[in-house]
Length: 468
Image (cartoon, rainbow, N blue to C red):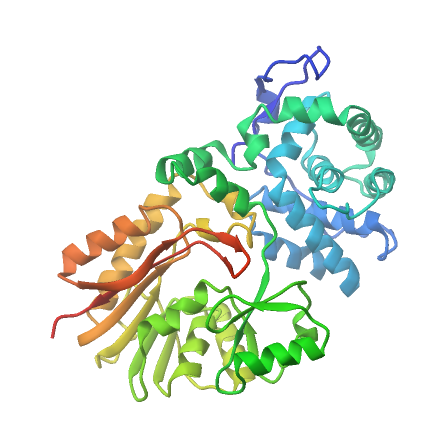
């Protein structure tokens, strides 16, 4: 991520031109964070959640993905489930507005803050400038609790006065400061410049909507298990539980208000699973029938594996290079009372294969995950421009390797959660030429979308058949 930020203008924000970038805000952030320090703050206070979220954000800015960073903070603290939920909400909000927040910090702070101070300010600014119709917290509560949080941690205590001054200035001069900040693309779109440029080049008519959708909170979408219920039955179950919901796909139900999985009717019994509506297209496209031998490559966490088995009595092998993530596939299978063979191995190699061809192969290959940033808003800050080519090269090797394992007449479904053509359409076209693969009907590129009757991430589908 380019951490350059605008300089503090000597003019009033209302009259300032587009601010220039200051070198002191462009340094690489590789801090030694005291994540194990216990602040003594009350676990039910906003200050406690703010400092936890700030520690999380600071770790993301050094290269740790957001779920892992949250887990590390939780593991070293005594957070209650409620506090964990608040930390998670604040951290995710911060990631979605990080460009704007960092630009505002650059305008107001006298010098580039230390990493944890910058992260704490970014978390607070995301709450104060939240786009919710009803703000999550009162503004002055956020200021008071952020200052309290700063005072409680040794990495931020010396900056308590600056934190207070910055936040109070924002409350006084919000309109002018935001107008100035939004002259910067980083603040306006909340993506690195290379990402914005890539979106414009790939989708000249749709890039603004694409970026905007990625800054929204995702829905909670469920996939009904047709072995245990029907769409009509499950919608009735939700209605009886007082949960508003809408069907947005053949198996997809979107809840009007996200809830924890423990509160979802039928989840523990395997009646439903959590899965994006776009991702639910994979299993039906494979056209798996009873008795077929099926490979789900790069299978973790197992949503597509389980969906295949819900639709057909097939012999499924779930392959993933990460043994820990593969364990999640096993957990999902157990909850749904389904069975598959789990193999911890690299889809790029053939050493694990027994030589027996598969009738169907699902290749959900590695990619930049640029189509799922609304679910994983940290991705945009963790990826680099060169990752697209590197991951596309890896994916092409995986696809060519898996093609050798497909039986004549069999079908391979190529899937990515990317919106970059280099990883999707260009990859599919090159694969077809290299392998003389017959391309069948499939949705192609789905851009992220939300609204009545639909709501899905950005995915790409290409289906190929092997000549007999």
